[in-house]
Structures are given as structure tokens and as C-alpha cells.
Length: 388
Ligand SMILES: Cc1cc2nc3c(=O)[nH]c(=O)nc-3n(C[C@H](O)[C@H](O)[C@H](O)COP(=O)(O)OP(=O)(O)OC[C@H]3O[C@@H](n4cnc5c(N)ncnc54)[C@H](O)[C@@H]3O)c2cc1C
Image (cartoon, rainbow, N blue to C red; front, side):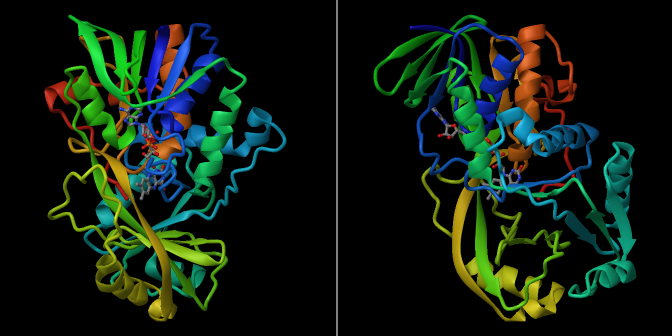
């Protein structure tokens, strides 16, 4: 079997690349290879499914803005039934005195990109959100529109369903080898013993992307990092509550009648997760998250955790930013990796960008050159400061 393009990983990034390749007019053959077709362990389906414009780097803001526009015209793109339950609840990123300069600089970058983010002091914030305690807070940046949350599984299914009409071969298998002759990748081998020749290979393997790159003899500093999400009930329901990020890094947002929270993993000791480890670290909720929530939102003194899950971030250890585009030497091997906790919201834009690169030979809608592999080879960080 020979395919013009082989995409390794069929969750949101791989599906989006395949979708936009066809949208941009690519007529060659495409194989989308996925080892976990129920997506039980994909970052996509285990994510917090939120979208923001509050990034420090203009390119990241632009990627999210592309997706936001897509969300706002979802039915035009995917049909009248399309619905991902997008709720434009906003983000509220809080800072104490120490975090204020960064919050201000980020806010300036966001406003320059046309984002609807307000920078408010502690008094303004507590007037806007009476349930909030401003203890230790100097200011906060609030996304009045253009930010919120949605159903990640529904989004993935929209893309996957659309692909069925686009002549894509879905292959359920694990890529166990990548063949290379000099500066070209030539094919992939699968764990079922099959071998596919490939004109181009795209790495969309999420947290496993570092290992997949290594199969081609290429270094990519992307590894799985475990992140826990806890669900809890509270008596008080705050309909106006945004996704709140405390200066400690702990976040909380409403999800229907319950709340989701996380962000408690300590920096110290944070390292690669065992690929099969999805066990929830419950002590993080009791010992770290709950005290912070009860301080920030006093009514959350009385809450009841009901369930939890753990997923893996596709963590870029160099600079917590995406790696997008071809390897400079092995130019028919392309990366769409290392999103470090913000890849779901970037996936449509990245799919579009890579499709433009392949079909037209250059980026047209969003220039993703700054995310290119060259910086990885040089060890030059392109750092995103707002990693949640
Ligand atoms: C707890 C948590 C919260 C998050 N919250 C957010 C958020 O609020 N907003 C946001 O934008 N992002 C968030 N993210 C990040 C986001 O989920 C990821 O960046 C994004 O889903 C990456 O998509 P992907 O398709 O690259 O990876 P994945 O969804 O992990 O998909 C990769 C796929 O590749 C397959 N694969 C891997 N290796 C092989 C192989 N060798 N052969 C065949 N198939 C293979 C895997 O089975 C998998 O299905 C969060 C992540 C986690 C874990």
C-alpha cells in the first residue's frame, strides 16, 4: 500500500490536518492511523475543553482566534446539526503583586490582537464577581467574550464524521516503525505486521509524539505529563463564573451543574508520565486544591468531590509551545506536536496551517514559522508564559 500522506494519530490534531488538506484541495491519498479508536486515552477527550485568548505570544492568540471564528460559524462549516455546546463564559486570570507585570504585558499583547480582555483591579473584580475573595489579589484579566468551554468529544466527532465524506482511509493500528532513507521518510510499519509506503508523514501523536519522532531517528522534546481533573458539587451555583485561574495555578470552572478543577501538580518533580499511568492523584484535591478554592471562593469551603480523571499533556520540555511544520533536513516528516495543554483549541488552526503549507507551499492564514522545528534544533526557546 502506498499513501501520499500518512498521519500518525487520529484525534483532534490528526483529524483536523486531514480535514483541511481536503478543504484546501489536496486530492492525493491520505491514511489516518489511530491505535486507540475509542480515544479512551487521548489528550483530546481527557482535556478541560476550554478556549482562551489570554496567551502571551501573538501567534498563540491568533491560533485560538481562528478556532473561535470556526466555533461561531460551526453550522455553516459542519451542517445544521453541528453543536459542541460552546459556552462563552470567559477566563479570569488572577495575579498578586508579583504577577502583575506579566499580567499587564500579556494583556497588552492580547488587546493588540483585538481580544476582548479587561484588566481590572481587585475592587472592580469583587464588584463584578461578588463571590470572589480578593485576598492576595492585585488585578485580574477577564475575557468578556471570545473565551469559554465546549464538549471536546463532540468537536472530535464533528471532524471525524466530516472526514467520512472526504476519502480518507482510517486505519486502526499502532505505528511501530518509520522507515527512512537518508533525508526522506519512506514508509511506516504497523503493529499488525503491515507496511505502508508514504510520500509524507505527519506526526500527530499527542503526548506520544516524542516517541514517534524517535522512530524516524528524530529528536523531539515532547513527553507525556500527567494532569488531574476533579469534578465537585457545591450548593452555590454561579451562572456568571468564568474559568478562574488562581495565582497558584489552580483553576476552576463550571460544567453544567457541577464544577471542574485542577492545576495542582507541583513544578518540582514534574516529569514524564508512564504511558499507561492514568491513575488519579486524589491527595492533590484534598491537600492542595480544596484549601485554595476555599480561600478564593469562600462558599467553596463546603464542596463534595464526586469523580476525577487523569490525562496526559503533550508537554514540550523546551518551551511549552507547539512545534509545527517540517523537519529542516527530513522535509517530508512534519510535526504538529507539543501543545502543552492548549492543543485542543489550536488544532483547527494548526490543521489549516499545515494543509496550506503542503498544498500551497507556504502559510497563508496564520504564519506558523515561529513554531518551526529550527528552534528545537538550536535549543532556542519560544516561550509561552501563560501555560495553565
Ligand atoms: C487534563 C488536560 C486538560 C487539557 N485542557 C485543555 C484545554 O482546556 N484546552 C486546550 O486547548 N487543550 C487542553 N489540553 C491539551 C489538549 O488536550 C491537547 O493539546 C490536544 O488534545 C492534542 O491533540 P492531539 O490530537 O495532538 O493529541 P491526542 O488527543 O493525545 O491524540 C493523539 C493520538 O495519537 C494516537 N497515537 C499515538 N501514538 C500512536 C502510534 N504510534 N500509532 C498510532 N496512533 C498513535 C493516540 O492514540 C491518540 O489518540 C488538555 C490536556 C489534558 C491532558
